[in-house]
Figure 1 (tube, rainbow, N blue to C red):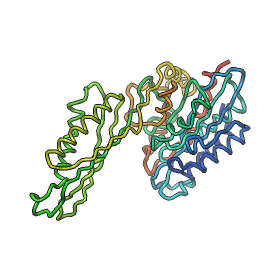
Figure 2 (cartoon, rainbow, N blue to C red; figure 1 turned 45 degrees about the vertical axis):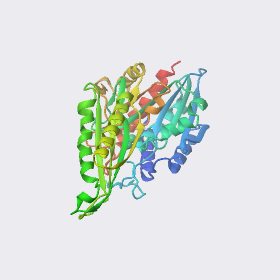
Figure 3 (cartoon, rainbow, N blue to C red; figure 1 turned 60 degrees about the vertical axis):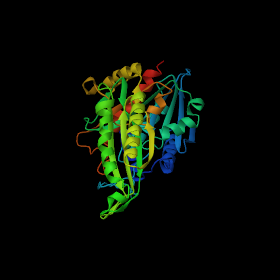
Figure 4 (cartoon, rainbow, N blue to C red; figure 1 turned 135 degrees about the vertical axis):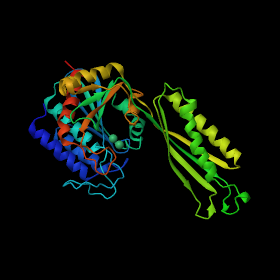
Length: 383
Ligand SMILES: [Zn+2]
Ligand SMILES: [Zn+2]
């Protein structure tokens, strides 16, 4: 259903978007690009500035009022591109290193087919979301009354996946991606001369104890049947070579698949941090935030998704994943309110990892991605 002409144009769009990466909610040029293309296809029901820079376009076909949504993300990352491509990022320090240029182009390709050739009975809302990498965009769109203004019964989305063979499809019913929590623990004491530690209450040795002690949460406090990762990624102190630091900051992130596990980790972390601070006469500031919630696929729709994929990608290229992965995805916020299914499409074994300065979206998978989205609409909104 995606002919050579559309396939070639999708590649052009993808490379054009790759040149103009934008961060977070600042996807102004990308949203303009999307709106222009949608208008070119003859789509007239287009709403902008939903969740700051989000775009929602609606296509109706047939008589039914059943509605579903397809979602793509538009934002890029603060990474300096190291690829030597003709369509390399034109913006220093910004890069499409997660393939959202590809996701947006894929949804545009599907939009053109759905608008021009229909083949479904109902309403499709095309959601172009900003600020996915932040984990803030979906919430912002929901906060702008997305569900009331554009009601839909199901939502579908996908992400490309390096390390999965190009053009392979993978999903799983139930949990597929984890929650991400961030934490920061600030220890405050009294710094001083490195030769006279007894006169102050320095923070570096207690901070090191804290780093070790936090490792006991997963190994001793969490049910071994639950998945949890605690990664301490920074320890910053204000000391210099001959001065003991009066302040140390520890930060990192936590991945889980259940809300109660995340809550338990927060509780244990604060308890340990307070105890260590008390033992060493330090003041403490503890910050813990839920950035992403776990992505839980609807059971029935994910089985459907595998059925649809086995036709589009081929039975031998459609994989039902055994285990969830510990990456996180803002799509989870939509699934809190509406059932849906999220999947991965292989970006190839040769692909650099996501968020790597040498990453690039594999243009050869644009076609199957768009065909999958069109097939989802025609299957879920069948006559
Ligand atoms: Zn990303
Ligand atoms: Zn991404």
